[in-house]
Image 1 (cartoon, rainbow, N blue to C red):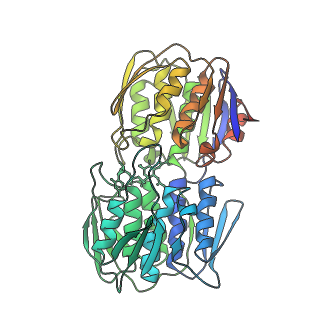
Image 2: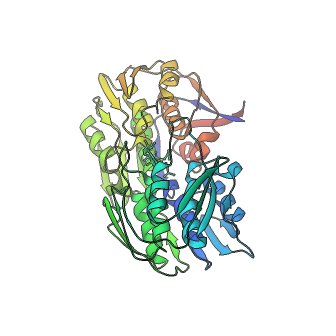
Image 3: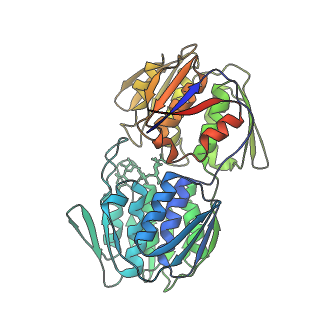
Length: 420
Ligand code: EPU
């Protein structure tokens, strides 16, 4: 296993381009199961998670080639409706093959993904949606076995205790596009990644309205065809790079940014006093003024993204004053707190709250990454810290940040890999 070593204290400077969105490409690749015709997906980031999804598609009978940001998916000689535990357990997003398999083959056997370090992460809403569309579902030996004679459109309220669910909305939408009649998903997730999936499905011939709002309307069609699609830029990678510039006192031009996807983050950064210039798909982040602490509450889109919580906590750790961070999506997503405290941060966790008292400087230390976004938070802290930070279990970072070392090195950061 590799660890990432960072010699902190360098102001980042230069230009960096954001890659395609991980959380858009994963369900979009799953959606290619809805047709036998070829699909071409462009702007695909080269990530551990993308490769995991390609392995699942291959295990389900697709031929899927990945070359220089493009994925071609075509039908193989035979197909399967079983997604195995060893593949699904590597990544929760694999569970969203359930909807397309059920829509297409009327049966699916998909391993339950289980929990993960950021929380319990149940799939009850996914199953509720499939049942409402007319599937019978049995849980057997860790697998969801779903069957139907015919999926029928239905009214489905998909809100859960923590609000809407991104992958449940994706999964149900993908099952409903081939159901007969009209489906209404109420309390649907509004994330840009859900919209990107809907746009791809529409290119395949699906009839969908209202995506991007809490009420999605789907008129089932008999058949979907192949399509060509380009993935939207990754708003979480963009946000992480913006914070990398701010936390190092840098001057970075972030390219391939969809400004309107970053509303909550930009609003908070403006409140903190950051200077951001937006122009034609680029965002220049020039640190200058001292930042003020801001309070953050994570919420479903368009609220502040939980996937930016750890990174924002790192920034607040070195911002004078007190900020309160409230996690409303995954109340246990705080594994990074103790690691940041090892670097000299003053953070106290109280249930779903973290109270951050900004310090002047962090000091480099050996720390451990627990999940993807916690790793990103630790990378930011390491970039700002005095001295050397080594982050072990860095494979988490490879799940969601394409070429991150190269990108940071190009901005002047002193970052390298070492064997653990
Ligand atoms: N939830 C339920 N029941 C369900 C599904 C979800 O109670 O059946 C709860 C979850 O436990 C959580 C909340 O609903 O409290 C929201 O979870 P959601 O289902 O939206 O999460 P997800 O779809 O599994 C996606 C992203 C996550 C991101 C969340 C929230 C993908 C592949 N993953 O997960 O991304 O944190 O939405 O925005 O799209 C990441 O990229 O690091 C990551 C974890």
